[in-house]
Amino acid sequence: MTAKSDRRKITRHERRLATELGGRKTFASGAGDEKGDGRVAQRYLLIGDVPSPTVRYPLRIESKMTSKSAYTMASADWDKLVVAAIRAGEHPLFHIQITVPGIGPVELALITSDLAAMLDVPVLRSWDRKRAAKSYQISWARWSSGYGAMVIHLQGGRGTLPDQLVLLDYLDFKNLMKDA
Image (cartoon, rainbow, N blue to C red; front, side, top):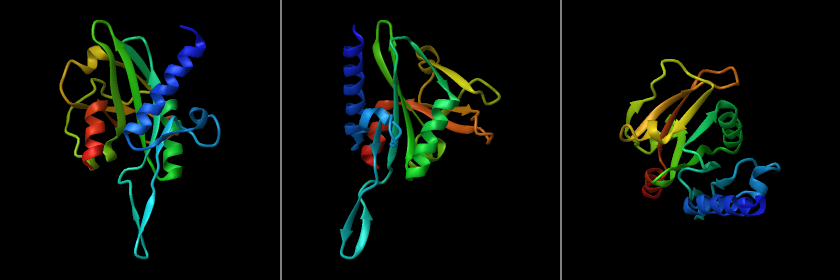
């Protein structure tokens, strides 16, 4: 594949993610002022004189794709997404697509434990590490070894307490967002 065809594939992928969740792809994948690959922004409808929100959980989406069976999630990538999401009053969603030999593409979603609690995500297991880490290698082998969502403790570079994140199947996340 050429670099141009790779870019087109990534752009289609980012657009699909954002529209599936009811949002839009950001211009130039967030290279300007609007960070992130996509947004499900909060909109309001006037009911009488009272503004009523149309989106229950606004999202800031960052998406990563790899042809490998693992992706190294760095705290710096998560921090950048969280800062942009907080400034806009949105929840961060980190989407990861890995390619598993013999299975094909597998999509995972990484969200905050707060959003997971709001969506009633059943967290059934925790990552093996005892302490928070600056990066995690998210692989199909580790993900498929159990069932349901798992908790990851990511040590941020902001000098704050570790973020407690929840890793779950993207299709499960998408269905939970539709039901919310």
